[in-house]
Figure 1 (spheres, helix red, strand yellow):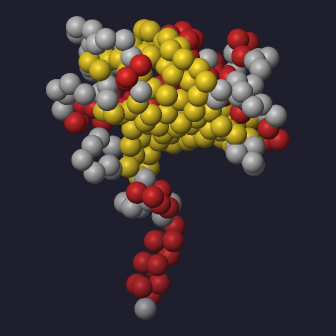
Figure 2: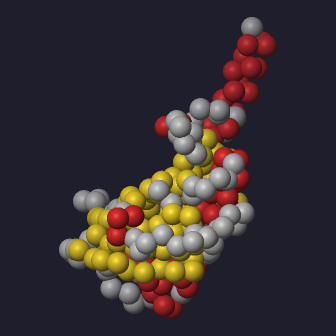
Length: 215
């Protein structure tokens, strides 16, 4: 009986994120620089990657950074080209060329939708839209699997943001899966840190809401 009681006590002391099957299939793999990194297996594809952390700027400011797609070449890591292809209300079409670590150049076009929930949470979601991309270029691999989101929840009375960034991307080409997943585990936190830095910069201090239906 004493052994059973001790075993139960030890189990209760273990942090929930250490469990092998976290909620929704997500598994915590690291915590660094005030960010927590999670991964989730996807049948027949590379893993989903998610980062959660705090950004010391209001959600509207963070959304302004994310909606300023033409500035990605200046604000986002590995980005060489960031071109606004089209905008329709709260939907944005972005064409981008990136030079990621451990891989050759990639390009893609995505459709991004901005939104605001009734509770004040701001979001972006994107999906592939390569039909609007320029013709493929020699030496640049076209990315076909690329979807994700940002969720921006106000904290501290709206002065700061609890941000969640999720990305599921397969860069294509002949890269082994382990290289792809290693690259994604690096590039997702790097992008999060870049958005955090941009949101705290003077460039976006007085940026207007990027939502077409701003309230």
